[in-house]
Length: 369
Image (cartoon, rainbow, N blue to C red; front, side, top):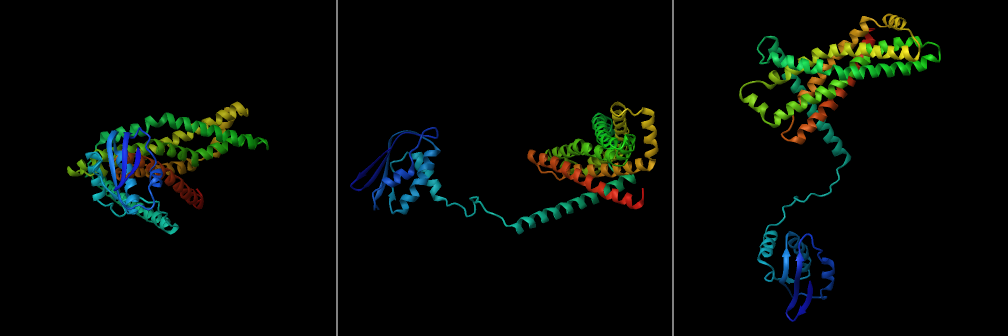
């Protein structure tokens, strides 16, 4: 690029390649070479220009405003016709105010207010969903709900039998950990036999239901949200409404009933396997006989302890199903929205499980159960 002065103005000569893969000269260096002061005309010569693309146009768009600000009149006649057309389009339509995204900083009160508003909006959506779900449940009880028994049996299998391996693995490992940590402390007092009490009561009242619920929240709650969210993206839920079928009756009720029915069974299953895991530690590491361990467990754990765990598991099943189905039904219509709904379902279910467990533990303690 050559810069030469003439009697009637300035001539800017372009030569070579002016594409994205080429190295373009710095505009600031060119502006510093302009004579001071100068208020004439600036013309272009592109006869030796071998190629150009949008980067060349962008280079000119950033060069011309500083020149015009100095009072220099820019003539476009020497540029290629395509470049002149793009420059005319870019300069004739002004930039819309507020179109450029700026780095705005939000205040603390604005951020807190927005989070409170989102929390209230989420609570309102949750109450609406629960109300519609209760109506669908009432219609099922009077025999007017459109729900297929085959769907219920399918979800019973998916949420019950298919979940046994992962629940067994986690329950045994939790029993092993509880027994090992507890026995190490009790051994200092020569009371390692009471590890049976620790594992039995902990698994029956808390850990069996809790671990089964967390597993099902990550396994089944996420699956519910992903399934219903994908149906929302594919407009299948809209098709149900068009046909006069309530999606909560046809899609949500079978899932919620299946998970609610299976959670107590999974809880008892986890309780027994957790106790077996604790017994394995007691037998192998602390030389407690199997008969003595079982006798101590039966003496320490009552049916009321198992009942508390079963009741908690029922509540956990409802919470997991509501969280997964609500996030799936309220999902947006994009792939990213399905991912967000799945994540929200798992987080919402786990938080609800922990809060509900704390409340029910306090209630059981107050009632002396």
